[in-house]
Image 1 (tube, rainbow, N blue to C red):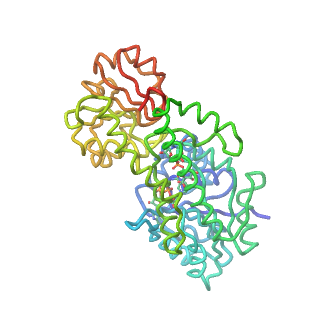
Image 2: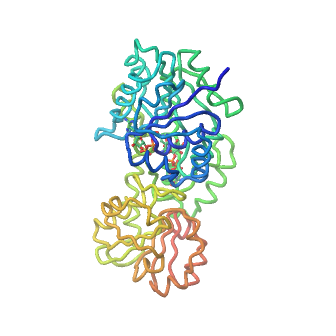
Image 3: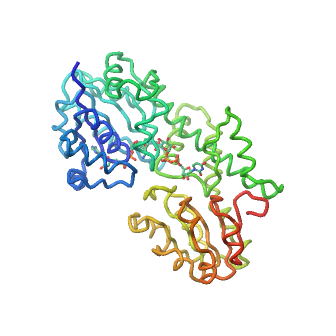
Length: 432
Ligand code: NAD
Ligand code: UGA
């Protein structure tokens, strides 16, 4: 049996990761509508801040197993093509499927009969079957194959998936897709396209619910003298609960959890099924920045309108340059709206989307000590390990008496405290 020739549509976090990983074993062509992106990737510029990705890109290009193109006709001879285009939120919360529809229509024109279109974009229930209807008469088969990788661990997650979900009615198409992944690449769960599509949203929404619950518990902890670290240590020791996604923070964000919870709620509304747990998790999350602003005001003893605040961390989590829907920026925007002057430092500041920073009214300063100058409060918003190495005596010289609010419980409180600063943890007995 000859190895299937693979194709990928969309060279973003999911598409590029998929392409470079597939190219380890398969001849792979990756198409993107962004010609500049295609040119840079073809030159070996990885564009994304993902461990292991530049090396795999280089290897794939050097071996001649990986090519990039802006022309869909370069996918004409592919056996399996993965669709990895964006599905952003519309104002009503529903997923905008225009890029998916455009990709399906373009593939309908070029792929040969028998080819498999694997839908990796996160799409509402029914989208893969609708794609199959659009492809009727072409002989192209559409299969749902949702992706579960995390940003900052994309290559690792693609190579070591907890599960590979194949949502297909056509067993032959499902077999071909499994052949692409190869034996031993992870447990394969076969189901209908509808179940596969819903399973993806259900998983992301569950993670969101889990974090919101922990964030609510963290608010209760200081009120009753408990420590969220101990509470979650106990909870996580129970295998039925699991130890992951129990860390409190400034709220959950990123390019997927917010849009996917919104899309799931939209699907529920269309079917008259209330998903109250998900709705409540979103409400808890939306209230977060406001609660943090109130806690800061109480701790600083000066009104926010007269305060200077330093944000440590601007990305939505550590290990990435992605600021899409970053809770750190939501907090900055909220503090600015209330009149505070907000400076921000992030280890990846130079590569962050500067428009997003401007929209959040945060002034980026490429040095944590300069960023802290004259601050009334210093807020840790992203869990960058680098922040544990900060010289708090030096920061205290810049911002004597400042309040240090650690939303991620990242710091050793002794650092700021011994430097004469006031340290407030999240959900700790003496915290906020
Ligand atoms: P992204 O924004 O990083 O990249 C999308 C790419 O698709 C861009 O390069 C864009 O130019 C290209 N594109 C847009 N329309 C196109 C078209 N018609 N034809 C060809 N290329 C086109 O997006 P992403 O983060 O990789 O997300 C893609 C999908 O995967 C979304 O549905 C998302 O929900 C899902 N997903 C994302 C992640 C993640 O961690 N980012 C994880 C799992 C699933
Ligand atoms: C998430 C899921 O984890 C992936 O499985 C999924 O494939 C992806 O969305 C997607 O569909 O795009 P990602 O967006 O990379 O991945 O980010 P996460 O690591 O899940 O973090 C999401 C948010 O939750 C971040 O703001 C993070 O800081 C926050 N978080 C996470 C917490 O506040 N506490 C935790 O314990 C864990």
